[in-house]
Image (cartoon, rainbow, N blue to C red; front, side, top):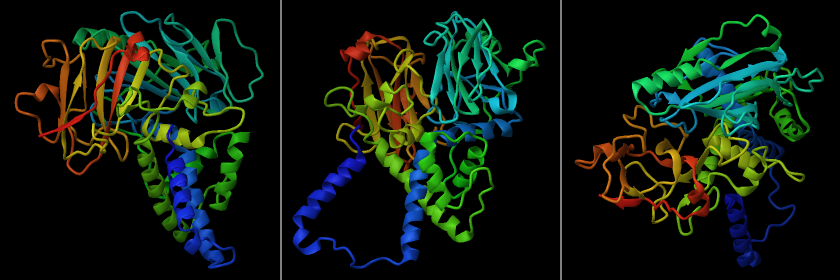
Length: 474
């Protein structure tokens, strides 16, 4: 990743060298008051904590959205049809039927996740902890290899017996996050109905109730507001401290916990800041969010030489299997960036899906909703299942609110060129006669794109098939 922080640091060093004679800093000159120092420290730590906690906020906001629909732990939230703009989850795909659940092994003990075998309808996804560390992938690209199975989600520090016939999934955390994607054979009513039958074979329940299975609760979220977007003011820290009170504290968390103490939080207790602190935090949260938006525009390397399509993650992140750790560091900055725009990373990247992110046009300018663009998807896209391209708001990484259309895929009835390529248009209004190939944007709103390969073939990795940049048009 070309770090925005590294660029800023190098530029600052150059400027300092050039003007050292007249502007060199001097110890003891203009010493700030303790009050100003504490306020600056408070703001700086609050910003870092927002970045550090991005994956955790995604999970707790998902839990809150489930509860607003009458669900709770172990209940399954699913889409009975491809989602619209009301499905406010970070960068979802409108061509996928999502299945989501949150678990709590501190409350329930070991929890069973039953995954059915895959057939014409593929179901895949990941079991994660509350910081969205993928513990196991499931389905054809996961540990059950599409045969289905019983995954046993274990409590932190579990010392009990693992029963035969279960796939153990140990965790260091109490709260778990399950995100599955169901891909129907096609989007005909018959194949959608078959996919929902598969969804309703997924079950979650405490192991203690395996002998007398409880009735599984399924909640259809289609055309309902399912909002997991982070708060953008000091309420962010109300949510954060609430979930931390329910979670384990690991060695890697202790520095952040110390920073939270300087903001007045004590683990296990209700956080109660005064009005002045809330005012500072209101600003700090927005500052942190804006930094993350800026960082996304430079995330990952350019995937094809000379292209502005980038990998959404850096190599070190993928190599860590999205733990963001190695023997030397916990890369919480890359982790925060990743989970500011995405959720539910797989343990093994690129087996079931492969993504590239587009934030700039062919001239290197950021994508903006008032401009018109066109780009071509070349023929013979290297996918076994399908490709798609989706539009997401830069400020929150969800679908544009009240957008009439949020994505295009190879499943759609599109106008195609004689060679099989597809031209796609972006802008506030559709080009005349090109409505089927148009995605709407909004004046004054920045956005970014994700191009997804479902079932990527070797041509993606070999880079023998190249996705062109967006070109500005009238």
